[in-house]
Image (cartoon, rainbow, N blue to C red; front, top):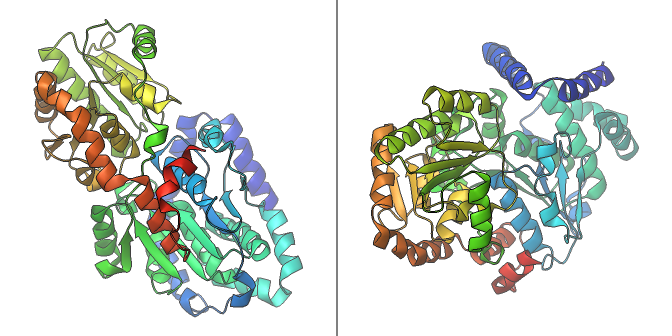
Length: 480
């Protein structure tokens, strides 16, 4: 049965179009929500709380082990940029092996987007073992009663999460990591359970947004899992914004001090404004007149980003400033909806919905104003990059976005989701050339002060239990 499930999943990924795959996933998640009562009953019947689980291996086995990060892959997102920054900067100073275990690296072309950025990284980057291989690995490392005990402990979980826990547990049992650092809800939860079951002494969960109930991919098991993991002293809960940490604490009914805020770190050495010739070539690619102002963005075309509100805002701006042009770089399940909205508003000449651009600095250098209209955000990495390049930003008040803007100095935060109100702020900026020029200095200064890479790496090393020596060389290390 297990092999059949894996075969069906692989076939579906290759054969079905992205929109249909997304619809099937959403339908499955809705079914889980309907059945959450039975999930709660299964959770209550688990043998012990995970905090009381006796690990499969002794603490002394992990002393000199590697640092292992866990994520789905290296897709074109802000989380993955932070993973790249972290891996590159900590490798030269960790004094031990450092690596990234993935659950779906290469399963989709997007999931290797940032792999070239780690071309000089000497640690390991690979997928965790397949489920059959993981069971074989575990069978060679633990006794049969121990393997049965592991299966009973996670039996309450959805079947795919159980598989991911087994895959990661097999890897951790072999690698004996001193630190496991899981990124994003869907990967961090199975990573934390696998690490706790095996006996990893230091476990980090990076929550990169506001609570997952804000998103279509929320699954009911997450609530029980987080509540249970929060009782483990080995587990550190980390969020990249104060707004995100508060939102999780309220959702889980946990004290706010159970969460550590570790803001994103931006590598200034890796982002520079593109020269005018390259920007001119990009303008020509989109047939944008040389003097036309450009409003742009880079984000996933998913519901929480509210791309349709972005298009409505573009229509409002174009009605009042017809020469303005708009470029939205991104991919996601709402691409067809975005393209339909562009056509419905008659904006085909004004708005370009483009695929993700590998050179983010080049794309950002095209913009006179960066616009983000999200409903829910953690700390948008691209927002930090825009400000670091001195580009004024306009964002809706969504989660951690407010913390990434010095309101009135580097851009504006708009409390309303009204496209007219958002458009007015964009027009204010486009009609204030002297203020825009001031952002060239104010933006980088603000980002360096609050989101510097050296600070982020020093905090990460401390959470890993490692000395933050040579913290001042983080930018140089990341550049290498």
